[in-house]
Image 1 (cartoon, one colour):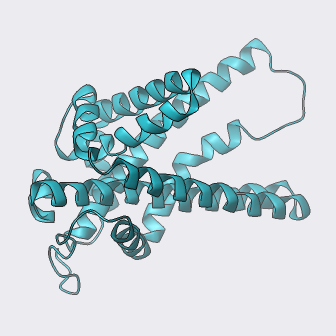
Image 2 (cartoon, rainbow, N blue to C red):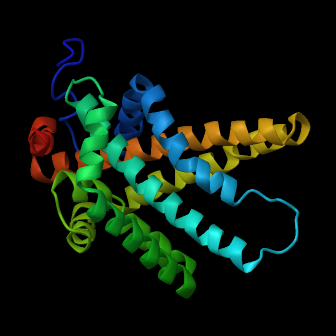
Length: 248
């Protein structure tokens, strides 16, 4: 059902701008903070628990295997959560109310390609980081919108990466600045719940870290969607409904 209070195609004007991306990201997220936050909280919980310091003895072979399995689960949940938030954000930008069930169906329908994109991006970024730090930043900027390209344009993992490289060309410095700004704010902000946890106890610290990670995860997912949308608007002259028509 369309919400009449949200005008159609209100995101379809202007060239690509970091300021507009941030404003639109805040706008979309503020209207859907609870559903998007819950989705990203569930996705972040395994990672938070896996890498929380225990101070115990070195891990045994069984514990190491469990850790590896946990990492795989975390990657799967993260990719699925991003797909769910992506569809929900597009629905919001079209003036429609977010339906988590419908979003989950879309995410699951594209699950294997989405997982392939997540694994490829992670692998390529890791290889780049082994060589030098800066090439990894360049690569992450080039592949910034690979996930929405995979879901919206129904592309395979490799073609999604190619499509992202094509869309980001000419705006990579802007995208890099946007990505770096958000990562710095997220990193600095993460120190606050950790500091509070020292005085409030491990349970309080864990809860606050989960909330912060959920918020920053949801913000980042929406920001990627808005970036993809604005790049296509600027480069191809399409509007929101044309981009999201694949979901109808």
